[in-house]
Image 1 (cartoon, helix red, strand yellow):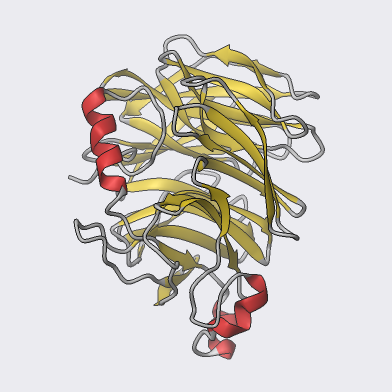
Image 2: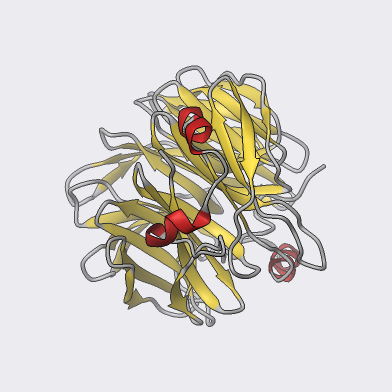
Length: 379
């Protein structure tokens, strides 16, 4: 048994009241750990990590990463970065969804728009290159939805519902604009995963295909390294990788308990969740033997280049909120390596994205407010 995958994420999803209370109650006891994935060559030549060397990239001389603070009223949930902009969505204290923009070069943040209280919930965000809008996925009034989010004004909509679904927690798109939404249907705790194909066109407007019902559990992650996408289904007892192709689920493979998927190239993907990083073939969905990771729970993975990935997670979850933070190296066919690096304070981590092969960003929330932290990727 392991935690419900949504337990430690401050999302306004259509979970039961008891589930939402458990999720909110545990957030205050989580201390964050950041895990950096780099090439083994850079690890071997650099020797021990000198945090002072990263002062310009977001770490202080003490080794603590220096966050960009968003303010007490903005808790980021979804993040999508490019070299010139990180688009951020999240929630406010009254349950409204906000849209903001972070400049990775100047480290400046501004709020573009705040929606109505208890409005649409956006749990996942994808911003196709060259378009003036992102695609957000989540829920509205107990139904899974997706919608446009303007990167210019921050305006939402139009909102498109997916009948028969309760909510979406995952969204990914290929370079050709073929996307998949990952979510769930049914009643807690007996959810069934559901995946919905989505084809984007200029605008972006989009055409939603037929919902495909997957294994028991929740569709918690999607990755699209090519025209073939992978989905991750997790329940309270197991996880499975499903292969999404041609508008259908064409295969399913059991995998170690996992919460997130990331792909470095069309073949090399990783599933992460707890104590392992499991390599997954991006074309077939077949998992390989995992490498140990120092997590109680991973909160995200992003792969900024074909040879490196970044993972964010917690090394300890306890009532006291104490832990030891870590850096890790994972590469296909190689064991993970770890080294300590800390945030300045206890925090919940919610999203991870990379603006370049050299720099990634982790978004979360603490008693000091919402934040986005730059994480330099060693070369």
